[in-house]
Each structure stands twice: as structure tokens, then as C-alpha cells.
Picture 1 (cartoon, rainbow, N blue to C red):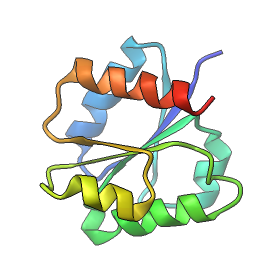
Picture 2 (spheres, one colour; picture 1 turned 30 degrees about the vertical axis):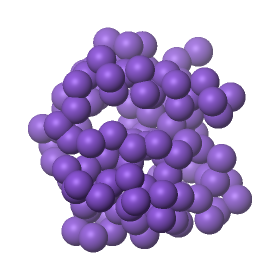
Picture 3 (spheres, rainbow, N blue to C red; picture 1 turned 30 degrees about the horizontal axis):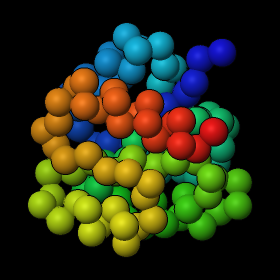
Picture 4 (cartoon, one colour; picture 1 turned 45 degrees about the vertical axis):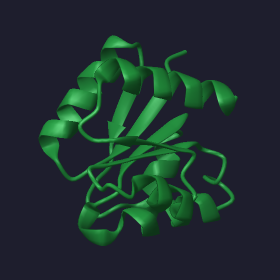
Length: 120
């Protein structure tokens, strides 16, 4: 069965690249609506969430909300950003992993596989 990856990002070009890459790797993607809706996330039943830190300052808040809710707290979250402090930001938000933009696609795929394998 295909694993679903839920994408939360504001940049359509980035979403398209990530979605194509994930499809090539055999994953199904669901792109979050704007604004973020927790019930939509629950309906998607993702195995992993990729969350852009920016989102007009709401990335940390969204990650904390996901990690606070009993239904979603065990879904791994990978935060992405161009912010130089992403390591600290992702730790503060409760994310399971992070990747700095721009990122190498092979490195990103490896991080996704590693994160999923640690949370099964």
C-alpha cells in the first residue's frame, strides 16, 4: 500500500517539485489547503508530514498543534526552510526532522525514508 505524505507549503513551485519527486519514489501526496485545517489532515491519514517553516509565521504553531493533538502527535513531521536557525526552530516546534532549503533531492528522499523507518 502506498504511503501518504501530507505537504504544507505556501510555494506552489516547491509543492510541485516535492510532489513529483515523491510520486517517483512511490508515495501518494496530499497538498494541504490554505489555511491549514487539522480535520483535513486527519482525513488524509498521512504517514508523514512535510511542513514549511515560513507560512507567514505559522509553521511553528502548526507543528505544535499537530504534535499536541492525540490523533496526530505520532505522525512524523519534517520541517523545511531557508532559515539558518532551522535546527533550533524545528526542535522548538517539536518536529521529528528538518531539511534546509534548497536541498538535494536524493538527500531529501533519504531523510524521508529514514524518518518513516524510525516511526513505524
